[in-house]
Length: 212
Image (cartoon, rainbow, N blue to C red):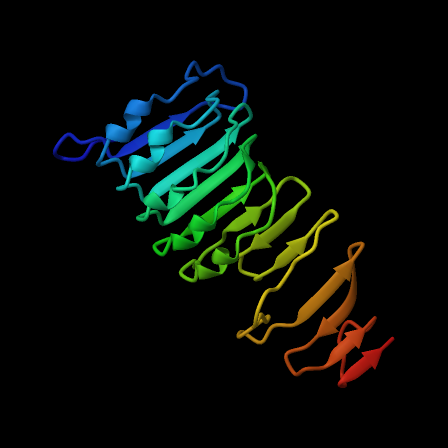
């Protein structure tokens, strides 16, 4: 897509899941597209992202979807794309850790999804700085790792042999007054209501401590 001045502002390359797209490489020269605002890439056979991708400082929308052969890691200087309000990397073989610089996406309001990739390590503490997110987004650390979701239910999922560490003065704040439920083996074990009642084996505790 071009704007009225002839500048390329949106790049969309896609193919069906059973297609035979011939695009296998994105050249480093893409970094010269200084007015590019949106990149949508899905079901194409690219194998790596060009380093110059972080030079596209006008980007507001960046989506990678279903690229089985795409490897590499998220660049440490990904926060150069400071105008992003939508970021999604899903269904790739990208690995490595999520850089702490993702916490610098102060304009990220629409969507943040890192799902079904091979990322590993800890979720950076800076993730808590993404306070402007308003709609569904998620972070998924490897296929069996820690998943943090900012969906409408405000859920924190832990799967596999993982744990969550809270550093410093950390707390869980449910300002909407929702119930906190703890599950093991898909069964609800503990409930804490907005009134402060705690139920162990009781799904709707009616007193301060309700054990069933």
